[in-house]
Image (cartoon, rainbow, N blue to C red; front, side):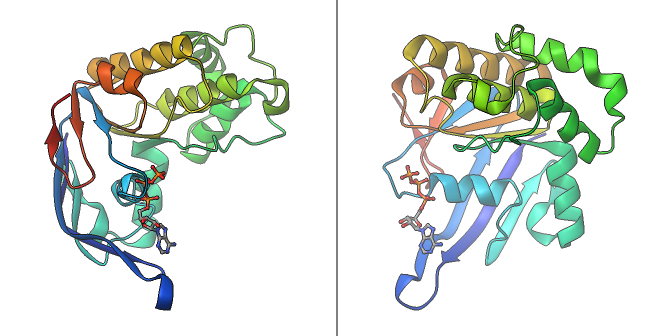
Length: 222
Ligand SMILES: Nc1ncnc2c1ncn2[C@@H]1O[C@H](COP(=O)(O)OP(=O)(O)OP(=O)(O)O)[C@@H](O)[C@H]1O
């Protein structure tokens, strides 16, 4: 199941701040491998992730995931796509402050319509997979920045998304942790055949990616 953006135009802001970020962008992302989305600050990486993840509707164009054009769906259908088929890990992490690591994953599963009580063991395993087996009952304020990133990654992967969108996953971690995080993402993309797109400036992530594209949708050789 691939992700194909065709003729996508996005304009943000109003009046003085109005900015055309994309004008007729074409970009394709294949399943089963890790794509690094690399480009200078302000080139549109986060905007591309938002459009690809049905968080931002383009002014024009199509965003086809498998057989669905996300840009053409109703708001309710787009919300369902986000809950059930797309995993996000964004810069701030967006963890819920009152919940433990295991509960972060179970809450996402509950929102997507699953019974959390049946998934407790799997949630613990998913956290072990990112090296957090000793942090299952910690809340976000009891975790380091890098550990919070890893909880957010485990949550993004938990329901086996068709599309995994990740923004700067290694901003708060050291090189060793960065390599470990990107390896988990790449392994999962290969094993599950999902489309995995990681916006990054980090040479560790770029080196580990199967391909590198810029926000103009062009393949970049590194
Ligand atoms: N709400 C907004 N209104 C107007 N312009 C915006 C808005 N949000 C972003 N932009 C502009 O759109 C462009 C793309 O921003 P975006 O955040 O996608 O870039 P980026 O490549 O992810 O940058 P960085 O690497 O710094 O995170 C930038 O020039 C930014 O100034």
